[in-house]
Length: 361
Image 1 (tube, rainbow, N blue to C red):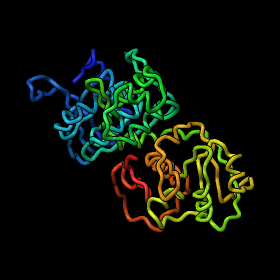
Image 2: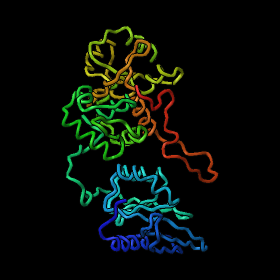
Image 3: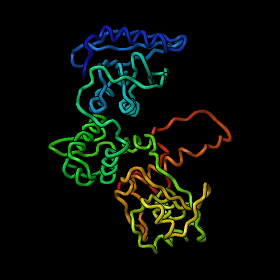
Image 4: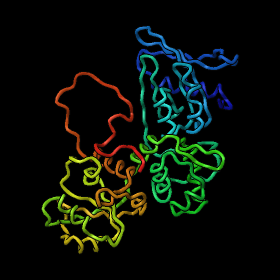
């Protein structure tokens, strides 16, 4: 494991941070302890108000790159309880640690500590400065927009494939240099693994979660009214058309084609020429409340991986999944009728929408 240059200074920073965030009645002691390989590590002893005692291995890092942490996760898990401490812990690294049952703490920032009977979660928010000592390798700024998202989409559509730079550049219509930077960024964040000139998806669920959590694109939805007798009649008319431009049906109307009996009251379609669709379907523009929505996407990658089902062109399964989950997240939640205690579950539980799963194409 990577150690910080000044472990004593890091230890003092940890003690200072714990003094700020520990609940009343809790005491913490940081001390050296022999490791299994004969070295010297650090352990954190925690004593609660009732005298309950628990211990965790402490790992100090100057940097906590997601790929490094992902590889070392089994090593950390062998201690039963472990706490990773670093000046900066990225959202992706936090997710890896949390899913792996490892606590983490930024010496002057956020933390998530679940050790014994102690649970502390703190998020200060705001933009963070670039991590000290970060490598100068060129990475893409945002994996979930523009050309990088086209690469992400193809990785998710063909999750078992090993990609060369040339293959992905050809498939996504991008330069080899940009594909290389995107692959490096994905590898840094432990979404893919790279070996012998090829890149393969490593953590599909985490990549989907990252896409869902990213800001949605500024697509332009155009509300329309069709006089056809219901959404099924609109879809029949779409089947009969010889589409002159690309299109992709999305959300509930697409889910109905994959898993019949999904309820939907309007048809939403990605199109690149709304005026042509207005003429072809005899649509009338309205400010709101239409039964047809034509969406002009800012990212033409939404048409990548379009597949046919029963004479209709549907957006790729990863695109359908992301759009459906975002749709559910935007809907207001109903208050529970009763509360009978607390429950805990996986971060990824309950996120599948009926009819569309996390499959590839």
